[in-house]
Amino acid sequence: MANYRELWESLGVDLKKHDELCAVLPEFFEEIYLSQNDRPENMNYFNFVVSEIHGYRIQELADHKEKGAKVVGTFCVYVPDEITFAGGGIGIGLCGGSDFWIPDGEKVLPRNTCPLIKASIGAKLGNTCPYFSSADLLVGETTCDGKKKAWEILGEYTPVHVMDLPQMKREKGKLHWMDEIKIYKDKIEELTGTEVTKENLEKSIKLINDKRRALQRLYNLRKEENLPISGKDALLITQIAFYDDPERFTEKVHALCDELEKRAAEGVSVFAEGTPRILVTGTPMAIPNWKMHHLIETSGGAVVCEETCTGVKYFQDLVNEDNETMEDQLRSLTDRYLNINCACFTPNDGRIDDIIRLYKEYKADGVIYYSLPFCSTYAIEYKKVKEALEKEGIPVIMIETDYSLQDAGQIKTRLEAFFEMLDAPEK
Ligand code: SF4
Ligand code: SF4
Image 1 (cartoon, rainbow, N blue to C red):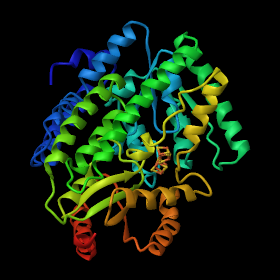
Image 2 (image 1 turned 90 degrees about the horizontal axis):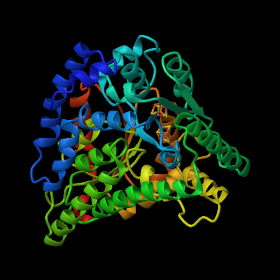
Image 3 (image 1 turned 90 degrees about the vertical axis):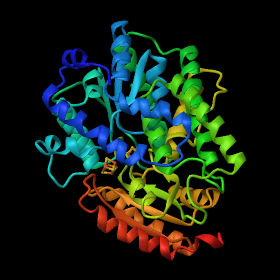
Image 4 (image 1 turned 60 degrees about the vertical axis):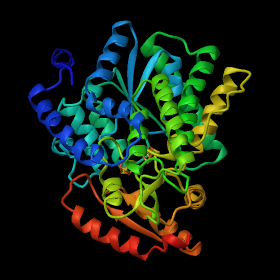
């Protein structure tokens, strides 16, 4: 990585602590990613993004900021990036996926809090994440209790705007969410000094839809009998989608898909024939949380799809691009975003339908229900999901785990037993 120390210093990053983080990541990435066989050549761009994770993009954001742009950090796929970009802002996803940030999070949060929340708060409070330091505004949402209370703490350190997400998908909930999107639009205009107009919103809807279309194309290739890309690599790409430049990212994903299409035509597979195909569902996996995928793919399975927010929930629905007025655009945004099936909603049967549909579309052999500890909505929802899957004859196991590797051996044993039980060759 080039030398970005001056830049980090200007952002108030704790250099000494940050060095510790930078020292472990390359080794970790090497072991998990670069050691894979037969990776597509076009993964090189995404390798580069990780190798420069706190450099290149941070410099880009700083350059944009110098020209007056504002950086907006978000933590949930319900926050509409289209509004951020239309108002001249740059949206970046900020969820923390590393154990490294947990101790700083635990200084202000109870230990029995979801690791995603602890890591996110810890990254900000410990000044060890230049993305947090680059953000002019953080946008939270009222999805789960842990997050709701965490925003109050985060607000003591930096400007925070909270979007009030309804948790039932009724007509009044829709009207309320549309109102919240309008309030968010006003907030962005106030922050950037740029009016969100029908024209710039039209452009940003297209920009973000294009990114989603590229990811849809990538995921469609994972439906192939011969898998041209590993689940780990696909996960990495979706994680990068949250903070990379959207236009460049879209172009790079399409370049990769061109290569993958060729591989698919030639019958190239990165897994041996008969490897059990796994659909992962559950809580999001924020970068660099690659634990579950790595354990699955080194225990004899292949991840073919993620029914998560770092998977299809992020891109499976597009925003309608055919809108006559700005009110129509805002309604289209409301409809698209309220179509996401997070476990914070009640009832949330749409998620069960999604899991069963994706299982069939991706020709999966089994489902792994992944949950971070202390995420009660996803953990409790397992009962209904399990019952529905069992009715369909779909094998499922739940694995609850945090970011640490202490339980890796135990999880591998459970995974191996699960894969053995799956009757993959008959599929
Ligand atoms: S799991 Fe729910 S709260 Fe978490 S990012 Fe996804 S939609 Fe948001
Ligand atoms: S994983 Fe669960 S507890 Fe953690 S932030 Fe997301 S919804 Fe909240």
